[in-house]
Length: 151
Image (cartoon, rainbow, N blue to C red):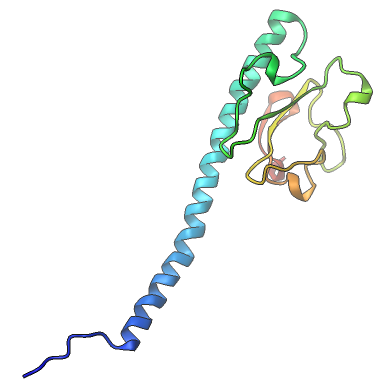
């Protein structure tokens, strides 16, 4: 007597459908989790970099002109992009065009800007710009660390 031990087309289609649904649900959840961890790491690293910048200010009486003045090489964020820094205090008005600004186009810092351009590696001065919404920023002269959309 011969037994048929194969699977029917319906069974195979059902298994593939279940797997596709699982991957469709698990992948965005996992990606969101990984991006959240990277964002948390960036906020910690921004605070550490800010501490070094603030110590430089205490030692020298001025903020560094660039991160290269205090780091070699300049630290990279988890997406492989260098952290961004702009000295604001004691900089001529003509050099402040790239200051980070809130929704009312008011600068978010008065001493220096420090931020990561986020996963897309792109940024613009206003935090409300589409390419800036994934940026992780230091704001309010160090009393805020978070994403541009939370500012």
